[in-house]
Amino acid sequence: MGRLPYGARTTCESCNCIDVRRWHREGRLLPDQHFTYSWTHFGGEAAGTVKVHTESDAVVLNYCARGWRTAQWKTINQRVPIRWTDCHFGGRRPWFVCAIYSEGQYCGRRVAVLYAAGHYFACRHCLDLAYASQQEPVRERGCLTARKIRMLLGGDQNVLEALPEKPPRMHWRTYKRLYRAYEDARSRAIGGVIRAADRLQRRRRAKEPKQKAKRSSTPIHHGQEQHAPPNGPNKIQMRETGNLLIVKSSLQRTTGPYRSANDDDFNFDSFTANRSCS
Image (cartoon, rainbow, N blue to C red):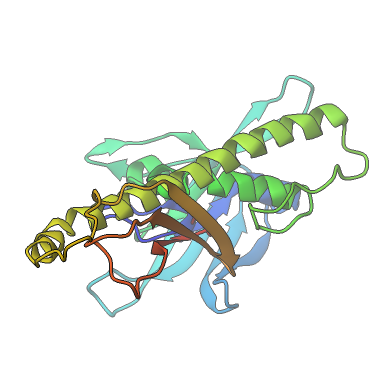
């Protein structure tokens, strides 16, 4: 994902989190258990560790934390209640209860994920977190969705290539639904990049009148034709380099005082968009 605008909110994807659904699938919510849960960065570097002790209706978290402006670590023991609800077709589903006071009020929300964006684990509402998709630039909207669909079907992250074929044992109805969603997201992603390239080109044109005025002040030789300012059709070229989607928009120029004999036939304005959306 590209650079976030100034004043953007912290995203859920950038924080360490605990998911009660995952712990329930792994059988870690049985009473009187002890285990260690850790996080790692993309490069494999450790990002944090928490020790967990389970009770019948809660989990106790033991970890160290520090503030943004302090270098001293603080040991924290946080008890997170668990609430169980009955499912329609049998079984029970666990939920974390956010037991944090936010702005003087007790939260008490029933959530599946708690985030560590401060000293304590809390829900995204109390921490004022946003999803990464909510802060995507216009030129990258739809790119993340298209990449997720490609990876779900066993393909790579290149949105300019054709969609992978239907995986074995997948219903055709499901594949067609994913295909329609992929085409819609891909069109929005490429359209956003092209619109951003056009805006960049218009900004460049807005800076050219002063240069054109200087050129028009030169005398025109007898027999030389004077043409109108260039307004030829736009041409778009796209290619991918790693995780970058590079778009080049061209404006065809005409002969006359607005160009010299050594100018190229096209004036390219390049625009690069980060294809990794996060």
